[in-house]
Length: 367
Image (cartoon, rainbow, N blue to C red; front, side, top):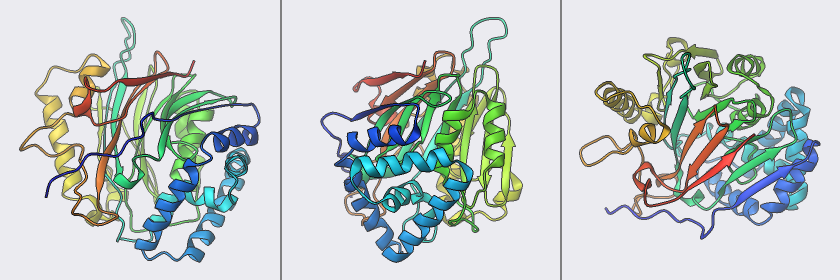
């Protein structure tokens, strides 16, 4: 079985939404991805069906998510309504995209993809901060054409980064210098009814001016699903296990945070869906930690990104899709993302870490 290439648009879209009113920001986003959002919905409808989730259930789950979002952050619900208006589709359809992680948690037939994150925390007490992070984003190859870079301006903080068509947020950095990397985890109690983790990521980037403020927002959110946020600014860094049984913190070890796709704290790990990611997640985690331990500490974001390049005989930190696998099992390394709080910079590579040097980074500034 030979891996295939990843379908990529000739020019990766960039969405800029600048408005103080969240509904207006949403309309701008929906208009700019007017064709892309229905295309993403079509793929997710196939994945929902593959997972045995009936269309009526998808709509019910999406409407429950909308209600939860409206109670927690009316502005986020208004932005979703604006996206629907701009794209000319029903609001629940956009809500289903934003709650895709929670809806798919109903099924084991469509397990999530795999991502790897490293944050190097060097506050620079005697010089400039060198805190930075890098992440691979692996997901279904069928969605390779349905993500874009994002520039959101007009909220409490502007932010830039990467997200999927119709989804409020994912990874990024804001104008206050708060950065967020995002991985998905799995717990037996995952479901619908809380704040979708993608919506929570967008709320954090729009509102939090520091790691401490971000953690406070996350702890205030009603969660019914799992994930991980790596949160860092120029002076602080923390890795969060998010789950229906609580939010749990980990601090840097030797100045470094590493995350793959399993819980790193005991309480949520006791209810982990180990069949989703293991042993792969543990192998990737141990490999990256061992590689970092045997190298000089990375001092630049490029050094850090290089730590995610793997070769023959090494655990695949990112993957190419296998064309012989069926829908729902063709994982692909869709993007590589680096974040630098000191300069409010996100760099997005339309490819895997192995493509560094052969593809150009897209550089976005939040300030």
